[in-house]
Image 1 (spheres, helix red, strand yellow):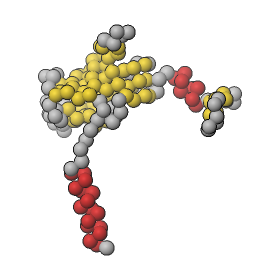
Image 2 (tube, rainbow, N blue to C red):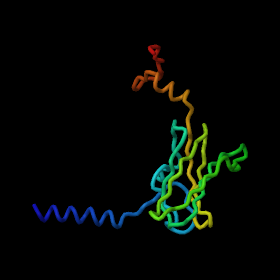
Image 3 (cartoon, helix red, strand yellow):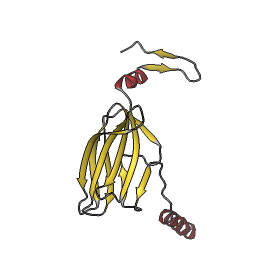
Length: 152
């Protein structure tokens, strides 16, 4: 029994040490110059939310100036900068910035001020009207219709 427990612990440790991290968000630049630890789901092409803000956290070398830019796209697909945030990585190696989201598609670009690395991700903020409809509707599994809940 003791041998099985040790073998299981070693298997888990080896798996964690040699795991490969992949993400769907676009990353350009030096490997691991910026590592996102929260606020952006790196496993998805885009995220949807009802929240009006997102806290983007990450790691980089101490003293690195991090720029987080919130953009939208015009009808031609050209990025339009909306808001720019700046953070300096402290001695701990971590940074954190609260980013206000607009209704619709929000393109978040996180990059180092020296432009050695950049990460681009998309968060689609849904309106509160959609949230209210979802919360106040009655949905029948395998049914083709939605019955609005008239009880408030």
